[in-house]
Length: 359
Ligand code: PMP
Image (cartoon, rainbow, N blue to C red):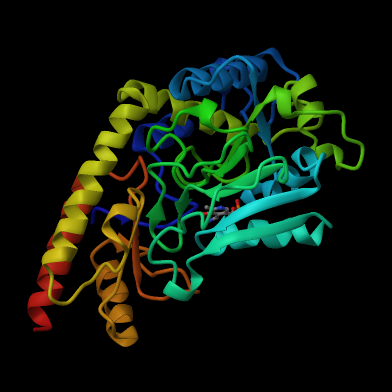
C-alpha cells in the first residue's frame, strides 16, 4: 500500500532524502563511521554545516548582514530566545494573535518578564481569518512585532505583511519556511523548527539581522544569538544528524528548482484540495479564502464522530494523520514540500468516495 503522511510535524520528508540517509547511515563518505558518531568539530561535519548554511542563504536569498544560526529547542525555544535577545531596549513586544502559536509566543515573553501587547486577535472568530492592525503601530515603543506567518493549527497564512514602520518584524516560519517565497529583508528575525519543511525535528533555523544583536548577559548561552553567530552555531554540541538531514533536504529543494518551484507545487496542491472542499457538500474549509494556508488545509464535516470516521477510514487506505489539532478538532491535511501532488489526488479521490457513501 502506498502511504501518504499528512502529519503536521514531524512530517513527510522527501523519499530521495530518506534513501540517501539510509545508504549513508552506516558509513559517511566511506569513513566507516556514521554521521551519528562523528564529532561536530570534524572536517566532515564542518563541510555539512557550511553547505547547509550556504544552501539556505542561496535558496532564501538571505542578505549578508543576516546571521544564519542552527539552534535547538524548537519554535518554543525561540518564543523565549527572541524576546531575550531582541527585546533589549523597550522590554516590550507587540503580537498579532493569529492563532495558538502566536498566542504562545506572547505568553512566553510575559513569562520571562517582558511585556507583550496583543494588538489584535481573531480568537473570537475562531482564528478563521488573520488579524489586522487596528491602527498604525506605535513607533519607538516595541522592540519588535511578532507574527506567525503560517498558522499550522488554524490553516491561515500571511501573504502580505502588516504595516509596521520602523519596528522590526519577527516571523515564526515554522510551518512554511522554504514552502513559499518571502523577502528576508522584510524581517528582523525569522525562525523555524526543521520538522515540517526542512527535515527531522531537532534543529531550529534562526535568521537574524546582525544590526539587531547586542551583547546581552541575561540570556542562557544555548539561546544566545550573538554567541551562536560568533561560534558559527558550534558553541556547544549541535544536533549533528538533524543538520545533516536538513542539508540533504535543502539539496533536494535546490534540485527541484528552489523555493519558487516549491511554492508553485504547494499552490497547485492546496488549490486542488480547496477547490474540492468548496465543491463538496460534506466537507468544508471555513477559512477566509484570501488567508488560506498553502501548507495546512483544515476542514471538517461538522460532526466530530464523522470526522473521526474519516480519519480511520483514510488511515486504512494509507492516508495517514488527517486528524485536526486537538485544540480545534476536525481534519487537517498538511501539504508540506515533500508531499507529492499524487498524495493530494489520492486524498481527494478518497474524500469523494467517502462523501458518496455518506450521502
Ligand atoms: N510555531 C508554529 C507555527 C508551529 O507550528 C509549531 C509546532 N507545530 C511551533 C511554533 C512550536 O514548535 P516546536 O514544537 O518546535 O517547539
